[in-house]
Every structure is written in C-alpha cells, then in structure tokens.
Image (cartoon, rainbow, N blue to C red; front, side):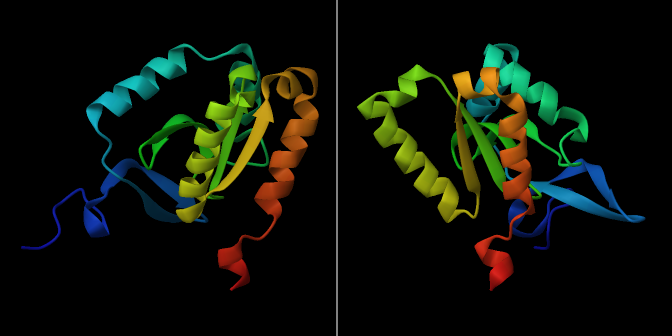
Length: 153
C-alpha cells in the first residue's frame, strides 16, 4: 500500500498551509499529536503569562528577523512555549518554579530529549523578558543566525 494522501513520508501529516520560498511551494510536515496534548496546548495559549505575552508580541507574525515562531507547540510529547521549526529553535519562558531542584532535573531531561531531536533550546527567566525584551530578542536572533552542528558537518 502506498503513501496516504495528505501524509508526508513516514506518515507525518502535511499542513494545508504551504510555505513559499522564492516562488516555490513546500509543504510543511507535522507529526500527529494526541488530542489531549493538542487540547492542553490550546488551553495554554489562552492562559499565557505576562512574560510569555510580551515575548509573543515580539515573535509573532515574523517580526523577529522574519523567523516564523509557533506558541505552545507540541514536540516529542512536550508542549514548548515557542518554537521556530525552520531554525530548530525552542524558546522556553521560565518562572520561579523552574529554580526548584525537582523542576530543574525535569527541565534538564526535557532539554536533553529535545536536543536529541536536533532542537536548540533557549531558556529565559520571566524577569529577564519583562526587564530586557530587546536583549532577549537579540540573543534569539544571534542563535538563529549561528550554524548548527548539522550545518557544520
């Protein structure tokens, strides 16, 4: 049996939204996400913290160096705060609970797992975003413009 219509190689769902790049159209693939995780991500989009909202206002609509970010995106069983699939960057906004030992251990494991999948993880404290959004954005742009291990090989 061949590939199912509407599915990319490996069974990933193809987005109906096409990405235009200098006149060519490329379909963006999405992996299937369990409905409970999708619902949780949708709920989290409605309940963003002040720091998440402030950062989202800078990231949305390709405002930051033309990068396309998605918020509360399900990846590898996690829901990340912001992700730029084309640059393979995840931006996490951390509140004070992330300073606790138990949460720090969970964050380390989460980061390790996502990095195994080729993502670069950036973590910012709520206070850093609220006090220095320009510095946070400059750092994101710097990382987005730096080569990944994959591009160096």
